[in-house]
Length: 422
Figure 1 (spheres, rainbow, N blue to C red):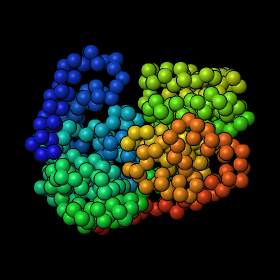
Figure 2: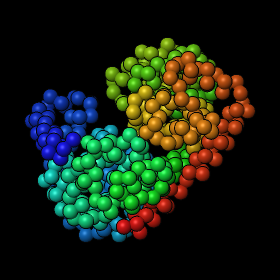
Figure 3: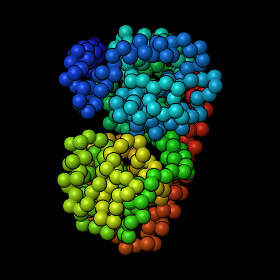
Figure 4: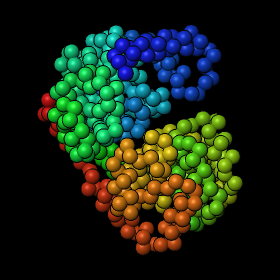
């Protein structure tokens, strides 16, 4: 991929957004992500100018892709934000934007990322004037990086995982490598990532661990109440199973077949995408009584409801506290979702086979607190064993809690590196 080709793609994207804007009425009822993101680009820089442009306080810009990356960044945001420092957060995902713009305990300002053109990057940085910039995980926006490089603004990558097959190490990753300032700070998850970055000329690297443990542990320690979920779980005689971030048909096949064959187990399904089509598909696969959360009230009789489908975003990390076993979706795609969120409650966790973009799933398998499954049969065999073996469940809980605690405090290392590392 050449820089010229990259800019052609950005130029086409920018004009496609304009087309969406001119056809706004046609998209007014569309719940898919692209129209929301495209419409969110309209007058975006003007809004940022009006809200942030006159602020004279020290500013730190943090960019995330989605809510998953926000869970990594959130402990850092809390530590960096102060009376003298404001945090400007940009995101790529409409679902993340819609949740985070309403939060009062996170960043001072939340925006979509202005599309990565040369002019947008210059204007955004002229407006925000960040003292430092943090990209979470693997967000490489070439025009922003080139402009940050030219302005010599300290830039960091948080929670990076750079395996041997990373595109950053390939020939077609050269435009990205050339855009990243050589003194950029990388806070990586493992030693292999550090070694791989050294091979391509990046030496300002620390193995910081994964701040997602700190965020998940903090959430687990915080009080949380939900009358509907609590009443639903109180009717469970065979335990509660949590199916989190169900992402594709394979995930749905595994968890729905489990629910259909274990009627005495109450199940909470949390789909990754909330849409009428997706919710109807989930209900179609379930033979037993399933109920949408939004259709429930204080008078709902849950004795005949086996599955509660959560049709809102943002509560999954807290809902795991109600479970005894968990399945995390996304493992049949390259994007397995957070397996850390359930283990901080001591839950055994199953997931699909594509685990190699993260280190935690393999470590969980080695400790016997996680299970990679490829079919409904494999999953049912695993969970049936756990249902019948109380001693193994006790061991898993103790091991999972110890593992989570041993991986805490990454945020402290990250904050020290950001403040002192460059």
